[in-house]
Length: 68
Image (cartoon, rainbow, N blue to C red; front, top):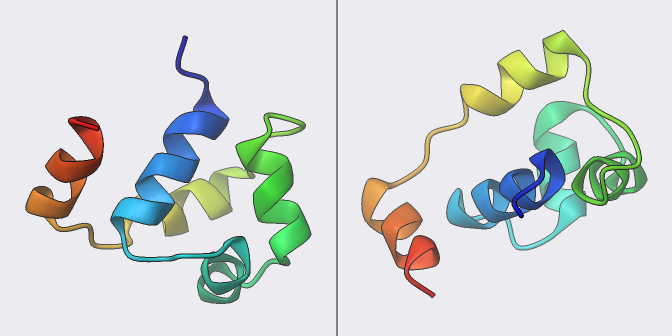
């Protein structure tokens, strides 16, 4: 079953962020915070979610991850 965290991790990678640290820098949070979100230990704030959904993702790249 897909959780928010697993979807977030997949989207992070699809956006070209290889590490939680890279992604965290883009969002202004630590890599520890990003990993906690991806492990479903807690959810990002509404402000963080707004930032996440506004990160561009290549449709082709996203489809490539979806078919693995």
